Length: 383
Picture 1: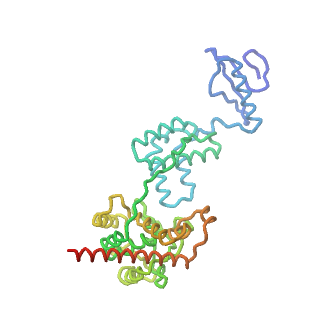
Picture 2 (picture 1 turned 30 degrees about the horizontal axis):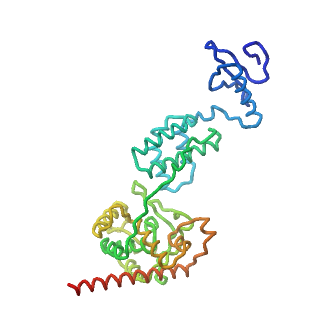
Picture 3 (picture 1 turned 45 degrees about the vertical axis):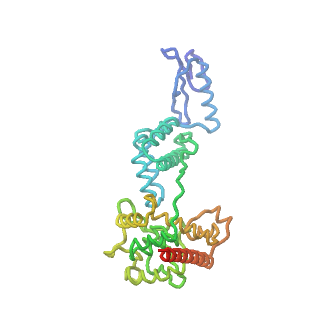
């Protein structure tokens, strides 16, 4: 190819523009001539740039500069569609995209999303919403852009802020045995068992929502967790697998709960052989909205802080398990948590061991109840 001086060159072409600067072009693997993304002050600078492009082609490191001209919004939606996500996770991702990510990046192409733009977006988002939500949004954006790197649409991930995806959630509160009993009483007999299963199981709300009569073992006593039914923001429950493979488990319960289990089966569970364990007053699956109202009233009555969630009862169960001599693996099995690293390090926890842990919890609960009762008697005597 001829350059501006009429000489033949081995690779690419350069020419002097009317402005006095130099333009460089080169043939890609497809033979299409591609111009540089900038002009150069001298012909030597243009030659050096062409040499770099030639080296990239020879080493197989060349990247199509037009590959990133893909709309981010379209790519992000397709990214979510192509993943086998749990219903609640998919709902969360779509909500984060709609509310916090697409308003800034939706109109851009992938290669237009730069580190400075990401930094500015995150800084502005921190002013508008909570740090936990920002961390979730950042992790989602980073994951999408990392796939774009894998797809060879962009060279590098523009999300490079160290620690931006980490959440520093405050330590959750733990209820006492007396507070758990008070909550169970305040929730009423229909929901009493749910409180105890959350605290002394500890079973997740979505796991309890799908428990059925055959899942109850009165001899252990205990309950089997086989499936889960998380509730979406629309109110629809999605029945499916547990949160992880470890979620499918037998939860051995403290002996004092046998009476509550039997009473609940007789009085409140659906009567069909495969009936749901927990249904509302009208015989339908419980909803987060109606249950939430009862929970808030009970929480206020017991005097627990406003941010104490039903889910926080699980922390009470974890604490009692540890105090009863449970190992980390024992606690993981009870809670339905999974970790490959922990599974390799800590010993197996079988059903017999889980019954031992449940017996330890039972002993601690009964002891604390007895102590509370004696304290009440002493106060009565003093009066």
